[in-house]
Length: 322
Image 1 (cartoon, rainbow, N blue to C red):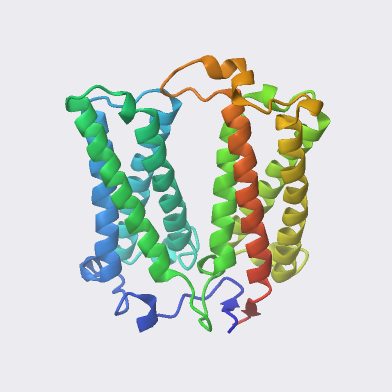
Image 2: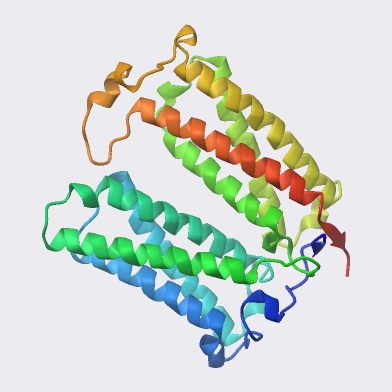
């Protein structure tokens, strides 16, 4: 059964299938006692405890540690803003579409906390000697995992159901847009070493693919968050279909070209990790060039699958005007 979606301007209808049990009470402290309110309190508590544990013993270092601290602090701050808006009933005054913002943020926060729950222990915790700092770091990792589960649960509870009238970002294609932009951002972090692709036109094309598809997906998200999909010179469904199809074609070329030029010896690549001299270094938060190449190749495949699913699910959406 197709998912019925508006021109991204309708609030998700509340039903028992949403997993919430009852509608959220808006503009009242009682909103905090509802299932979704309690879940957001758990998000607030877990992220607060995570960064507090780390900050109390200065248990972070390097870019990976900075990312972990940013994730916990950012998620705590935005979750607090969402709770204040809902308790005070300020949704009509919020500058972004409240129909699309909470689930968009929850999906990003889930991905942020998931990445941090993997990166922080593998690049920092395992290298720490037994003691107070290590104990705090392990506890912070545990609370980061709890935060991920809490945010993922919110996404599962509030996403669109078949036949439900809802904002675009609550649908599968909308959530896939979040995944696509997040994966693209991770790719960009691995490409900060420009020697991986400079001086080879084929590899520069791959970087252009990542940038173009990221920008287009980000534009689709921003148009929905701003409730301004009508500013496009073409219809929004046509834009989404064209975006998905173009991204699939572009990423398909990148999936072939990137591994070919990075790992095939005939094109100057390194088929084995041991051939890369930068991988001889041993550092807790250093990622060598070969590992970066491999990570980009894997993430390219993941994003291609996401765009294919986006294209398929977009064909099942029904857009209605109200």
